[in-house]
Amino acid sequence: MPSPGNVSPVPDSTTDDLASLGFFAKCRHEDLDRLAPLLRPLTAEAGEVLMTQGEPAQWFMLISSGSVEVTHAAPDGELIVHTIGPGLIVGEIALLRGGTRNATVLVTESLAGWIGGHDALTAMLDVPCMAERLVRTARQRLAEFITPLPVKLSDGSRMYLRPVLPGDNPRVRQGPVRFSTETIYRRFQTAYEPSPALMAYLFEVDYVDHFVWVLTDGLDGPDGPMVADARFVRLHENPTVAEVAFMVGDDYQGRGIGTFLMDALVPAARGSGVERFAARVLSDNFPMRKILEHYGATWERDDRNMIVTEFDVPKPDQLSLSHRQYRDIYTLAQHVIKAVG
Image (tube, rainbow, N blue to C red; front, side, top):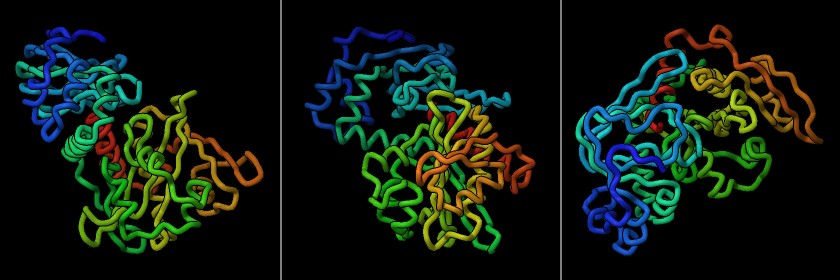
């Protein structure tokens, strides 16, 4: 692990020191005893660069005092800057996905905190009190960047678009919107309810290799129930290609939601360097086939019931979005990508 700032030796990492951080409030002493040897105290002065966009992610940081400026440079050259202060964790998503940093972190006020590697992050995720706090912290941090975008569908109904957030999983599983066996089968190629592990994968994402938009019913404002989602998942063997998929609640189908969400994936994908979309769907999933064919998809048979396609990410002028909608969606996606860097 590299040593940014001034990193103290491992033995200086004591349970009492960790317990003083609000991040570990309500954690049992024995849990902190196991974690303490895996973390190292960190101090850094204003002006020090602790993380650099594009470098391998090998550690994360918990801020005890002080602040940092986080800067994400988008592919189009736009710089997105945000300040993060005490009680927050930085760099954990990039470490979890084993990728590179999505932002540069500069100390703006003398900083004290802790750093840890994969083993420390794994230990934190294994302890319920810490795992829950990680989810809450990630949701709070992302929420600072998110103002759900109002959407008016062709039938006049109003929805809100936003990225998926940590903790959305139970909102879908326990929410009022119905996803029938047929809908689940078309999306997951199985009639069985998705497993908890699959639902965690679908709703707790890194926004870089796996990006998800959700659409909520606007009758009760931005916090209404989720009615649909759309995602792209970057292919490991070729990061310029991403597989796309979407699912719409039964009572909301046939209203143009799938087409709108596919349009909304385009600015997010282009802003992440994705150049081509791929899809693998059931051959009788005609609604999804029709939507993707609108963007130029042609199909090849994969096996008896499945077909596959790959096509260029559409250009902005091929979409139904206005210039302002495209820019608003692009900006929101970039803010979230930067927030988890």
